[in-house]
Image 1 (cartoon, rainbow, N blue to C red):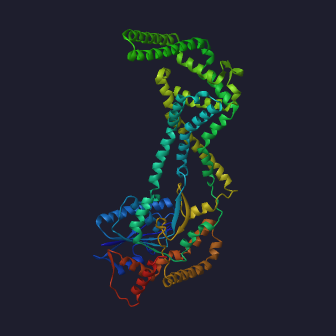
Image 2 (image 1 turned 60 degrees about the vertical axis):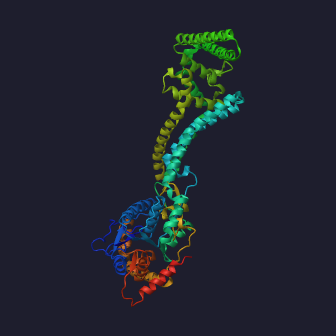
Image 3 (image 1 turned 180 degrees about the horizontal axis):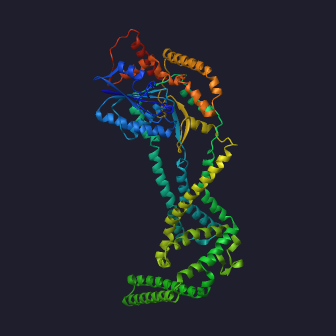
Length: 618
């Protein structure tokens, strides 16, 4: 048993239900059971061990790149079942049915499946769409992914602005090697959300666009290129028309044409909002006053400021003394006598006890130590300069000091973001420092990501309403959109370029020649005869068209007088001579053979000559 799988093209069903059988009372199409193509192929071809099976493959036939790839996955599943049975098979794809076959073979190559049972795959009048993926990863992301990606950059962006503000203000910290080392560590940590999201999206992108990988293309070309036979008429409307689609410019209106434009604005709203606040003195002063009065409640803690400051200075003084005493003890341990070591050890122990006592006293006398110190820190940073309150007791510089504004906004998403989640006790000591450092790295991107998603949906709703109004007066579609629509490119990550009678992954290989003149003229003549008959019917129906109600009824009336064989693109399989060529192409493949029937009209001889002609590549 050998199998011939037929794959129909775009719009083959023409509004009917996809089926391998013709509808009752309707003529079977070439790819359906009971068609003239099936009868001729079964009569002229058989498997090496006997009969041949005619197996139509059904897909929805939409002019959609995504649907063609989906159909390709389903076709590959059908091919795998034949591979398990060890059965030789051949594929015939017409129009974009050939694109479905190409998609299936690319996936097989990516999965390293040789498909040894596939003896030949034949495409008929297939305008293979050439696409390229968007050049940058950002453009290949979906709208929501773009929003999350930009949100992941917010922490790094704000940190960069903060560092820029420090540089502009001439802060002397950058002269310290210790500060520069910490700066490097902070930079790495602040970059983590961006690096993580970039890595994840890059992996997803690679899996989704596997067919662009050079290894996949090389594998497909080596395994399946020699088994391909491309048949096409030089006047095929689809091949020539889509091949020159880039030269055509049209005007098409759609109610949702502006939605993508407005929606992309939502992706950048967060950084734009940040820049707006940064450059708005009134907004920055307002933020500072809210922080001063409602968050830190500075007026309530002013009475405790001197006591807390003195206690903290005493603790710091004892800590410095303890460090010096420990250094003396280490020196005595290596160079001193017993008495010096004992004196040094006693001094260290005494200072440790005093430091612990000072800390305990500081916390017992100041139960609100953490909020007071946070208020003092806020005042020193933003409300005072050199220990003197700024004018009006508000934000220094009146919101016009860009460097100070960056510090304030960065303070909000680090210190304040952390304080909203954790208890004040966690801010004490090294644990508090660690919390202040690590928490924003995880918390801020999550919050910004949720805000970004909400903004995307909000803007999309507004854009939908605006686009409906603008569609009546604006012509947005350009030649790029025309090409994208005609080629069926509905992906968000790729750009449609053109169409050619050869798969893009076989570029660099010889281009198949069009059908020989004798055979091509037979197809052209058949198409012309059908067109003449349809024109006569159309003339007789002009009155009916004139009085039909509505544009939709007029379109249906026109379609009812067309068979679509008026086009060369749809006439290949209706010409017996072309079916001879198909039979010869399949019968000469491994696992198949031609039947030994009468050849009074020389059909076998002609078919062999035609096959040899199209097998010679340009």
